[in-house]
Length: 148
Image (cartoon, rainbow, N blue to C red):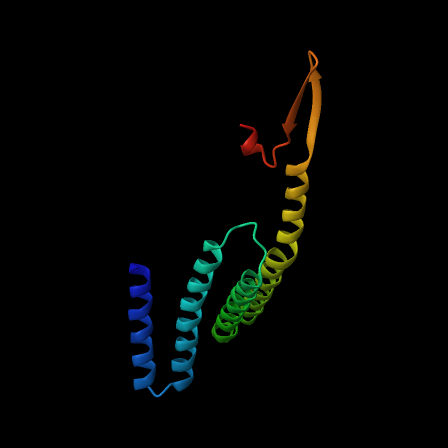
């Protein structure tokens, strides 16, 4: 809660200073960042409150919204501040913003689905062995932590 208050106060001060200097582009940029971060926090909170293994349209919408917000915030910051530093560093910052967007897309939409499918296969597989005419069915753990 304190972090939201800190973000709100700093954003309000930045908007006030930019408005007094008649820098309306900076006012729009700060408001974009503020509402983008607040929306991102809210979407993330709702996403993490949903059941982990549930597939629904709401969860897919939240994934898309989180990815679009993080991409737009990263690229917006990179494009806005890249001209203020050395050209090579500016290019590097833009490349890093694009790389984080591509990695985020992969992790949200490609990797997680493959991982959940393989988790379901591992959890559903079982190994049977006989010890003194008794069959013991053991479930293969899906991670080393579950084996402990």
